[in-house]
Structures are given as structure tokens and as C-alpha cells.
Amino acid sequence: MQVFSSNTCANGFFESKGSKFLGFLTTDSQMKDLMHSLRVKHQKARHFVSASRILNEHSQIIESFSDDGEPRGSAGMPCLKVLRGENLVGCGCIVVRYFGGTILGVGGLVRAYTQSVQDCILHAREQHFITPFVPKATLEITIPYSQLSRLEYEAKKLNLSLHKNAFLESSVQITLCGACNLIEAFKNKL
Image (cartoon, rainbow, N blue to C red):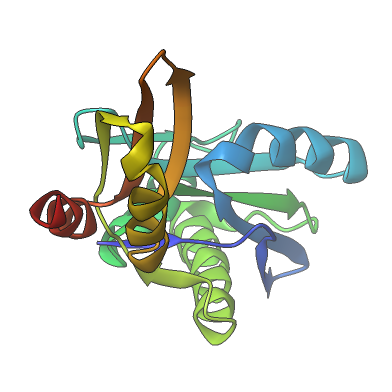
């Protein structure tokens, strides 16, 4: 699996028989805000098609899509199929369509929406926005204050994020977050 890992969007553009298809690939956490800003910015656009693939807390892939008024199965599902084909998770795409006056038919719409998302992914790859998916884990531990500086040093060495939850009388509660393999390596050093 791969993830889109950028704070900015990857863009794509496709034109067919006068209709313009503006594609945007972003993280799942930015989808709602991006949709709102695109609807404000592109008020004359006819359709705002979306598709997304996210991981829930049980590492299951949850997929969703919207045709936004296009014929059923001609817009959102083709976008979702591109995300599936590229094995992308934790991201979504939005394609804004400006109608050009010519009806494209279901086949034409499928090709246009597919191409728009593929252009977004190509741009994202060129910018190195797509990276391999790394499963994350957390570890909660309580240690004496005398071991805190060593623990912070080891966590920094392994690139783990460290959060001090509670300072107790003689110890501190800490939560570490990072890649599963790094958390395991950290456990072995304790």
C-alpha cells in the first residue's frame, strides 16, 4: 500500500469536447476542507465528483465515492478504481467538471474522470508525494525520572514521537508513537 503524504494537493487537468476536468488529490483529513474551498472557488462548475480510501482504527480500508449528479457509475466509481489500482490509502480525490456543451456519454465520462485522477497521481509521484504505507503503533509506559533522559535519547534515535502524559511522584507516564517495527526495536532496548 501507498499513501499520499503532502500538505498540498496534487493537481491534474483533462479536457474533452469542451468539458474541463480539474483533478485534486489530497490526504483524507483535508478532503472536507478542500471540497468546501473548491465549491466556493469554482461556483460555475457543474459537478464535484469525489472518491476516497481511508484506513480505520482496525486497519480496514473504507472506501467512498460520489457521482454528484453525473450518471450513476460514470464518475465517482472510476475515480475510486484508479485509487484502488494504484493501491493508495489515506487519501481522496476531487474532480471538478466544467460542462463544455457536448454530452460525453457514460464511456466518455469514465475516460475523462479516470484520466483526471491519473494525472493527479502522476503529478504526485513526480513531486514525491506518494510514499509507502508504514503501519503505526503506540506504546504507553511508566518509567522512573532517572531513566527519562535515556528514554528520550533512544526515542529520538528511532524517530519516535514522545508525549509525556503525566508526571507522578516518582515516575512519568509516556506515550510513544511510530512505525510498528521501530516500536518493537524500542521495546527490545528497554
